[in-house]
Length: 250
Image (tube, rainbow, N blue to C red; front, side):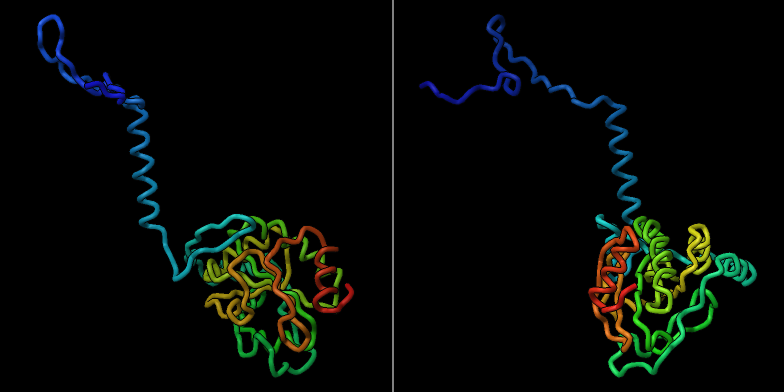
């Protein structure tokens, strides 16, 4: 009885018509030469090793720019007090904002205390930022778009003057390393006021997404007007956002 199913002569063995013997099954040659196979094995092993040792938090998924990345907490680099003081002097950051009114009863940052990077002293964000519209920039040293945006924010702060305070907040990941943050800002020549969100409470209070950079616009009474998870490319765009959401022309 005939069949329509094709026969795979490469995969099957048939008796030899000349001597009636059955030839041995022949294996197909590998598509990869030995050197390539060992390279693939090495790469797979190394990837598995990196995944195994990479540090993780409770939710270590962050977004930097348009790319989702996984970032482990940067550990503190042990530096002595003299080195840290030297980095602080070199960075010459502006002091954190001073209040111009009493804090509002519904201020988002009420009771939140963090280190003011320029001085190294504790800073009460709810009290210190009261009375003046505020632009908070959430950033990190490992965020490439942040490197591009911070100098633009610095120029905007000079443009806005006393109408709007600008405060930068370093993300929890890496905030435990003030020396590195100071050296990074010194390299950029950015002297904006800065705080370190070492425990993530600032981001939580502002309900800021884990997107870096992000900008949070806060009214003079301390309530959040708008969260903008985006990168600003010029001062006019920042001024437009401030005008739209805070009602302040800068």
